Amino acid sequence: MLITDIIRDRKFTGKLLALTFPITLQQLMLALVAAADALMLGKLDQDAMAAVSLATQIQFVQNMLLGAICSGVAILGAQYWGKNDRKVLGEIFGISIRESLIVSLVFFSGCYFFPEYLMRIFASDPHLIALGAGYLKVASWSYLLTGISQCYLAIMRVSENAAMSAFISSGAVVMNIVFNAVFIFGFAAIPALGVIGAAVATVIARIIELLWCIGISFKPGCIRLDLRELWHINWLLEGDFWKYSLPILGSFMLWGIGFTSYTAIMGHMGPDAAAANAIAAVVRDLLCCMCNGVAGAASILIGNELGAGHLETGKRYGDRITLISFLIGLSTTVIILASIPLFTGFVKLTPLAGEYMTGMFIILSVYMIGRCVCTVVINGIFYSGGDAVFDVVSLVVCMWGIALPCAFSGAFYFHWPVLVVYACTCLDEVGKIPWVMIHYRRYKWVKNITR
Image (cartoon, rainbow, N blue to C red; front, side, top):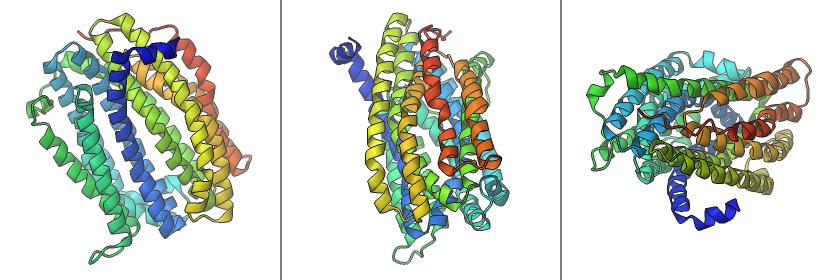
């Protein structure tokens, strides 16, 4: 019945696709940068690939913080856009830029001045630490710019400029990949820089992306940054922003640090485990693009309806999108299993690392069902109505209470095989599905949160 409703309701389907496609494309293009780094550096050297994969976990944590800020823009922005209040939307944009600048300065300072100390969190091998530290010192300059451009892209998505947001982000990624090839392997008078070349490519691409965002914001129909909003504080709106952003920040940090801990655990299990995990992480991130796109679209689409006071419509849309999340999860299982021969033949790995990679792919194929459903329902549907506390509770119980302790103790105390430890890192998402669906059916997320 729900599938028939989805097909027949052209208004719903059209809006969902119009939002999902650009957001998914944007997510895909961002994931392709990591894939390009891994594949190009994998062709160069296994340790180079593993070192950059570990080093980029620092940016992964930064992206969690920035993601929370941008989610605050999405939650409040979508509902105020549905209410047709552009003035408040501009104030929300100013708040997000101010907070993102603070985060970016902290991460730049850490990566530029203390890269070796940060790399020791993720690896014990001296060669991996040295390679990763060199990458971080150069890439740190890009961390100054990422937060600002992400806020620009977030405000575009909620103000019916999602296609433009995707176009800018995708264009920057294409340039990043081209610059990767040039600076990693060398071209004409440009010498081959290897790991450092990947960092240089990232910095150049981020500069172009930010300048592009600023230029586009002056076009009619776009939300432009008023510099006065950086210093003017609307305490009522600031309170609303953090009321919904802080739980997301908590959940993103719990999830981000937990996921980074998974990578650190695998990194300490040896270069072969780290290299296999790097490939599995790339595949996982690529396939998560669709569920991330649907989650982002759901947050905006349902948020618009809730902000406009159409609560029953928002509830009906939630039921349909939940079904879609299950279909996406099952599709990713087939894709992962089918891709094993492709990666086995393309990437240069040791025989042991190749065995680890195959096993990780099989485990990942089951994990992705839970990942897709939980991402869409929690980060899309629940967030659309400001219901973010559930995410924090579920992460504390499932990730920090079950999966992470099992993986840590298995790796360092019981010395379980690599694939058993990796399976422990995948316990949380699948086990969460029944709990998530029970909370969904309570419909606490069906709320208008505008003033």
